[in-house]
Length: 279
Length: 291
Image (cartoon, rainbow over all chains, first blue to last red; front, side):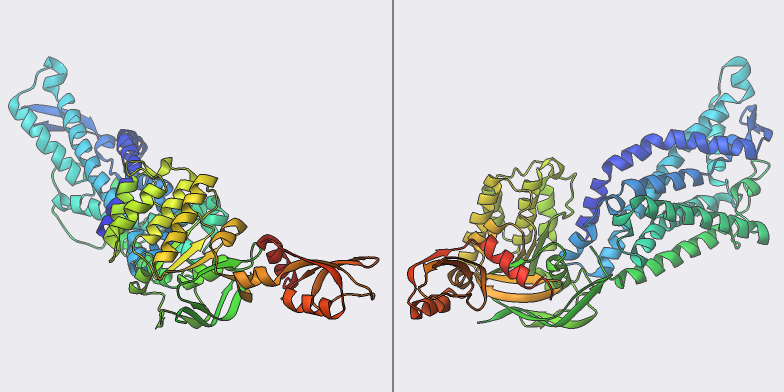
């Protein structure tokens, strides 16, 4: 089964490269999105100098990226684009649970892996941003060793405190990507399980219904957050200063999203066992 | 004779289509072809045996074991290849072989090498670059590589050119001769049926309407022509009855009985010509078109 999973990953090699190549573009889109949400500027001491920047850059959370990545993965994955895959898998000595899990593994591995890669890119971006916005660089075009060190620390801080949840936010982001990947891959598969053959009869209907439901769910989660005042809506919870927030565990949108994603996943896995047809 | 497959009141409902209820047995070691028009239920029957279509009631056994479709171990006894099978297209043939070998308990490397040579497949080649016929041949190879007791084939020779088809036919013939394997194949290609089949099972509107031995079918269905001294309207169960004066020509589905009857009536110039399978199958399916 592990070999089958690895083969699935190798099948998605091109998709993976496409996503990697799209990281800068998605990051740019993410940043642009926040430019309208957060037109705030800040000034802070960093190493030997003062840095002046705009929060719209540092607020980019990667959620947009995760959503786009999931959709692209969904579009390109063998599961969504080819017929006969279920029948082929079930012709092998695999039981239905194994096949059901195999459908998710590539998405669950690729999305967080890309998320980590995105964070690495963002770390470098943040470092360069900090360095280029120091007064030392802007006035004299020089840097000191202590400024470089301070810029790395600042970049890492910004990267890990985007949700205002302190240093713990990196794993939270990770959970966020997994939730998003789960939700975006579970919904279409759930629709396919409830209504076998929809994919074959109308791929566009299947895809648009899935995406519409996915977006509606996301909007619902954020709406819920508004109503109940839950934390961890990135653009609301962004700290005004660069002081790292104290790590704190509290009911959050991320938790709601994770629970919802796991709920949809469980429902899908259960329904998969009861499909009337696997071909 | 041992039964490899037994269907017991197997019933599958799929939208407006209903397969069965079927009660049928397949003896071990035969090459059996499922014949029927499009939408008759041949593929659904194979899919039901593989557990790909949920049965509403009934059961089926393979080599005496009642199948629980959610399990996995029983699939090692079966090979299934079908038109539109999903292979790992971006991987090489070698990688695909390696993958399947890791999933099968009794992989026969010698047989794989033999079939690779017979089908002229190159291990380094990427699957996506194979022609449709080559892919079908490769799917057959994967279904055969673990030496299944029962091989299910669904329109697998579609798209094969004459060379690949001949190689495929020769391999199947050889494997049938040297092993106890049983093959159940749904097909519209009558040359394959003619070359390979021992038995023919006719499927129509979700029912098995006839299960016959190919040789006796060819023997019993004949075109008979003769001259009769006394006027003859027709014979029971004859087809396409044509008479011009004392000359008579018709299709008989029981040639031995009809020839005896004609001899009794002192018919002369009796000629009996064989029919090809395609014609015979058409007659049988026409007969059962309103099951």
